Amino acid sequence: MSTVIKGGTIIAADRTYEADILIEGETIKAIGPDLAGDTVVDAAGAYVMPGGIDPHTHLEMPFMGTTAAETWESGTFAALSGGTTTVVDFVIPGEDGMLAALEAWEGKATRQASSDYSYHMCVTGWSEKHFDEMAKVVERGINTFKHFMAYKGALMVNDDEMFASFQRCAALGALPLVHAENGDIVAALQKKFMDDGVTGPEAHAFSRPPEVEGEATNRAIMIADAAGVPVYIVHVSCEQAHEAIRRARQAGMRVYGEPLVQHLTLDEGEYFNRDWDYAARRVMSPPFRDKKHQDSLWAGLAAGSLQVVATDHCAFTTEQKRFGLGNFTKIPNGTGGLEDRMPVLWTKGVETGRLTPNEFVAATSTNIAQILNIYPQKGAILPGSDADLVVWDPKLTKTISAANQKSIIDYNVFEGVEVRGLPRYTISRGEVVWTDGRNDAPRPGRGKFVKRKPFPAINKALSTWKELTAPRAVTRSPEHMPIGV
Ligand code: DUC
Ligand code: ZN
Ligand code: ZN
Ligand code: ZN
Image 1: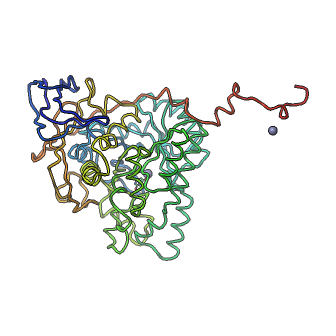
Image 2: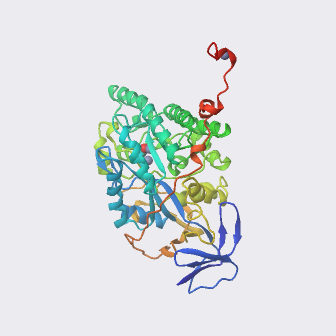
């Protein structure tokens, strides 16, 4: 059974060209002119791009006393309808540890996912047992570990814990990920605003200013350097954090930065002089920022100092958001975006000239495939790659609305945004799973786990500290030599 995608313009991260694509089974067999297959997918007048990869989702995550309402079934189908064919979700260990949590996540994902999926493992503390657990997690095909520097008293890790975990990552060839906000300062500011009687959603933004993100980003980068491991900063929302990443990269460190489509396109005005529900639905961490920060993030994507656009899809209903009525610190943190990431980024990025189509592909798919070590299985249009493709019609338009979204949440933070550029077809491992204008239904269970190998190169990363203390590299000056040596 073969399929040919006919008449499209292929957009890869590195070039644009016209060719047909022949798919056999689940993979790309050939790329070239005038190919023939059993069935034809019409790409005339459209672009053909690698399926999107959203490396940052929290489907059905237990968090802040509740559970994110977007399910694996609704979330992965929402992803496909917006051109995203792979999601990477965060596993949060409970008291039974990482492997038990992984089983719990697998129980949900294997039954429900209609897109492909993978996991990051969260490190929420440190003890002897983590040493072995992390090795076992890597054996299970997970090469990334996430650390929260915020959420004090819950998920937050301290510097000693983070340093121990980062060193373990270095030894295992895994990549540490960091939620970079100074959790101590956030907790202090939350208390201050509550004490002052500022209890509404706007205080959420006041309690998490850019400085807390900039400080934590710098600290995470320096700790990673000391541990001799690259580091990936999730949801970079402000210039201070971007600046830290830029400077580290300029100094030769492997540091990656991931802005979210929400931070690129929605600003802090979403929290002020709004009714409570409207603002609370937009409470996420870090919060939306002003335009100066948005400009910095767009510039970073164009310049390459930021590499990936994600969503942090962590979606709660209005009813769940109301747990925080009278106390903003109890509003479940999170917004959606999985189905809107690619259309909104195309509309606000490519249509405006801020990004080239090739940069769009790099930011939504290719770069993260490389960072996660799944390239060119994913993120590429090459013979042998998984046939994860989106036939992107730059003329299709819609007005985003909760009324017709695939997400099961009762609102959408992009409500009313007019997008231009949408999937005509989404193809996952050779199968057309979404067709514009056809009322497709989710096919739970068809998604597959994407195994990710560790990076042999990572433990050779770039710590000056490591070089200085490695025994063979020590050259002592005479005045430091003990007498008589
Ligand atoms: N931020 C959110 O807004 N939600 C989930 C976790 C996070 O860090
Ligand atoms: Zn986070
Ligand atoms: Zn997150
Ligand atoms: Zn000296």
